[in-house]
Amino acid sequence: MWKNNKRGKNFLGVKATYMVEGLNLDRFLLSAKNRGITLFDIKKITNKRLIVSVSIKESAKFFAIAKELCYNIKKIKEKGVLLPLLMLWRKAGIVVGAVIFCLSCYFYNDFIYGFSFSGSGSVLEKEVLAYLNGVGIKPYTRFSNIDIETLEDQILSKSPQLSFVGITKKGNTLCFDLALATDKTDTLLGNVYSLTSNESGVIERIKVYRGTAVKKVGDKVNAGDLIVDGYMTIKEQTVKINVIATVSIIVSQEFTYIDKEVGQEQKAIILAKAMAYDKDIVWASCKCQKEQDTYIYTTTLNYRYIIYAG
Image 1: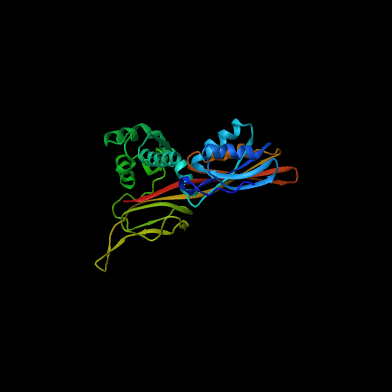
Image 2 (image 1 turned 90 degrees about the vertical axis):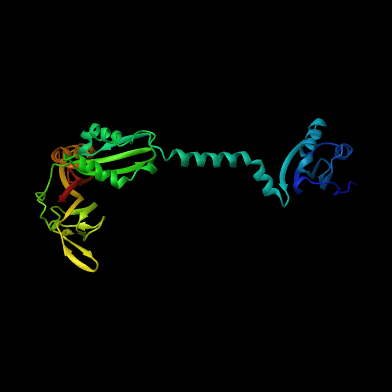
């Protein structure tokens, strides 16, 4: 009868447990012992099967002996208080690679690889690109070197054809949302002391250069609502001033189209956009409802409306 041998050093205190199958298992154990392998926790399950543990340091040698003597061997598990440390060591390459990958993403994510333009003002793409090039903003410029709000103001002030400039970062692309100044309110007189909404919708953006905003981004407004008032508070005193401000409002409008066929949502959206050809459309959706033998398509268009005073 074999006894468990618990002498010998165990690498990192970790053992590998194997199931060994074959004839004359005592012969196998003797061969392992004669080759200097320390065996732990030997358990004979049957005459042809046993479970035994060896130091992880001697695991490869033990496995080779079993194969050499034509015994079937299968690793069941590894155990030991320092097993987590060993697993981390084995995956050191993966960990290092992951760290390098994250650092690379962080580093390269700060560079501009390209520009994109949308909105009715995208027809001025060449002019905007020329301005960007003039101020040193080009591919491989760092995002962290750009003040987006200041850049929006600069482009808007340089182009009287634009009424709105919105800039966002998407991946490594600097995205420009531009609106042409087609629906200007007649408020560029320098003596305007309030800015009110001409449409009902949701405020997308407010830029106030003089005056005080009484609404904020995300607020719903109705036509006639006050958005920017002509005053400032200076040293606890309220002073009346003229307003210089720009407000972008997202307005929703519905269009109805009736057809005898189902699945005509895309057609309904195209027709709705054609009817709103002069609008700066930012989003469209369509719902279909069946009534008797006809289908009613209701298209909702969200478009950007710009108002400003100054």
